Structure formats: C-alpha cells, structure tokens
Amino acid sequence: MERKLFTALQGEHAQRLNDTLSKQGFRRSQNVLYRPSCAECSACLSARIRVADFEPNRTQRKVLKKAGDLRRNATSPWATEDQFALFRRYLDARHADGGMADMDIFEFAAMIEETPIKSRVIEYSTQAGDKGRNRALSAVCLTDVFDDGLSMVYSFYDPDLTDLSLGTYVILDHIAIAREAGLPYVYLGYWVPGSRKMGYKSSFSALEIYKGGRWQELGDPRGHGAELHPLSMDPIAEQVARINLPEARSGRE
Image 1: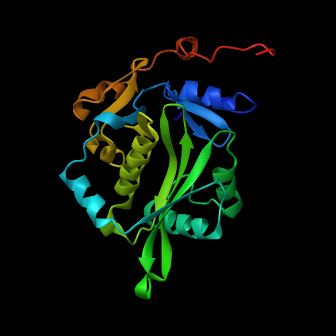
Image 2: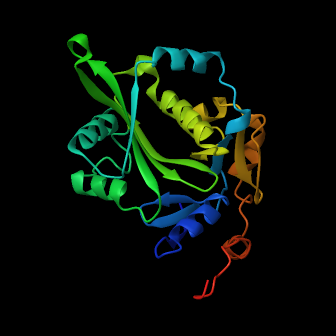
C-alpha cells in the first residue's frame, strides 16, 4: 500500500519551501509537495542529472539527431485544447489503466495551471503538411524552475512518433535548457530499482539519487535492491525529524 508524506505549498514563501524540500526528495503536484513514505519499502528514489557532467551516449546522440526538426516553445502554465488532445492520446496508448486515465479537461487544466511557484509549459512541435506551413504539437512538459535546476513535473508525447524517442528527447533538451541557464541539475522524478518503466532514467550519465538523507551517484542500478526490503524504511517520526525547512524570516525582513 502506498503512503506519502506531504505538505501544502502556498503563500508568499511557496517558492522557497519548494526549493528547499525538492533538494530532499520531495516532488510537486499542483499546490502540494510530497515524498513517498511507504511502511514496507523505500524503493522510490528521487533522481536528478548533474548537468555539467552529463555526456550523451551513442543512442542519445542518435535521438538528438533524429529529432533535430523539433521546435521548442516555452510558455506560461496555461492549458490548451491541443495539449489536452495530445494528453488523452498519450494516456490511452501508454497508461490506459493508470491513475490518471479518467482525467477530464478540467482536471488537466488544474494540473497545468495550479502552481504557486515559477513554472513553464514547454511544447515541442514537428513539421506537418506540405512545405512546413503547419506544425503539429508532438510533446509537452510541465516544468518547474528551481534555484538550482529544472524539475520535469509531467511530460507526455505523441504515441505514434515512437521512432523519435520523444520521452528521451525531452529530457535531453531540458539538460540543454538548464546548461544554457546556468542551472546545475535536471530533476527527473522518482527512479525505482528493478522497475521496467523507470529503467530508462538509469541510462542517463551523471545521474544522482537521494538516498540515506543525501544525494549520491547512482552507480550500478543493481546495487539498490535493499530498498525493496520491508525493513528498509525508517519510522515516519524519524523521517519528519530529519527534514530541513527554510529558515523563518521576520516580517521586517
């Protein structure tokens, strides 16, 4: 059974709270910050890429070349009908039995627009039609901007364009954006040892995971099986006690 530790993300200091807790393995969902805290395992490990040390492998270089025609457009967090249509196609093809399968357009808009921090929607379009007069929306990523990096909150893409490896491409492009902006990390969400769906994250070099209260190199993915053991999780009171919160400031400051 899944269990999460969470807190509300609101008020004038929401950005500072988000920056602080995200460095400790938390993730944002609308106006809530959460971190898995299951009673029987600690397998969900927050993952991030160290931008300065990242080097694409041969497969990733091919992806960059193959998707070279994609056009990026960064916008404010505002939902559109085109985004929702692509989102529905993606869910129906890839996650038809998942927890988001029944989301309607209003819930989708809330996911995109309800953000108390600095967020962007980054769209990727491919050429369509004759002479490139029109472009089709092919991938979308809701991205948070931290003081130390970019966080890929949720991404989805055209399931018919499997040859472009759009999921991989969007991550590679976020690394490029972070490098251009001088930001040291790209946060990918959670990586789970042994999970086939999460396995692609371990293919990125310079990958770190938040484990044992600190960020550390992933190393051999097979070396993290102990996190699946029922005794791997510390008591919830100890977890809460170790969380560092941003320092309170007086009203005069």
